[in-house]
Amino acid sequence: MTAPSAGSDIQIKSYKHDGHLHRVWESTIVLKGTEQVIIGANDKTLVVESDGRTWITREPAICYFHAKHWFNVIGMLRNDGIHYYCNISSPFVFEENSIKYIDYDLDLKVYPDMTYDLLDEDEYQIHRDKMNYPGVLDRILYNNIADLQRWVQQRKGPFSPGFVDQWYERFLTYRF
Image 1: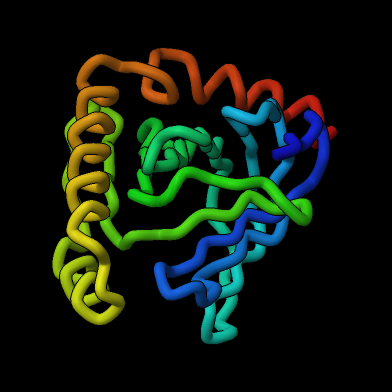
Image 2 (image 1 turned 180 degrees about the horizontal axis):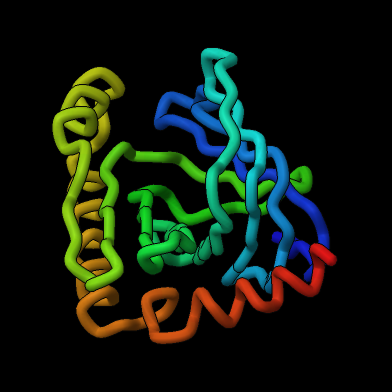
């Protein structure tokens, strides 16, 4: 797998387990790109849903993807602090100038005080049954949720103090 270079503009594409395209973020600036980790940033970027609907993100976001973890983390800079939206997903691949991953519906929403909620378990159950997820996948995903919760509690990786702010400062050097 090749890695994108810092400063390049890429897309983020999420898919569903059955292979259909779920959502595309049209423009993300790469801040760090290796075969293992990609850190990117976007602000007011166009998002296209699978049904053709579009919307624009409201605030700057720092995106963290790891090739060995079954989740990705989006840190959104809001007036009341950093909010994190963590997608439980396959590890990413980078190809065709895009970060690609399978979104497994489950999400961990982390608030500025580092409390969190697990979201969309009902949606996950529906898709698990509809798309016949293998039992081993269920175990992998829930193990990764536990890992992600530990990261939040230990302030590890993208949850460490200053992580989002540091990468946002780097993003600003590319924008102006």
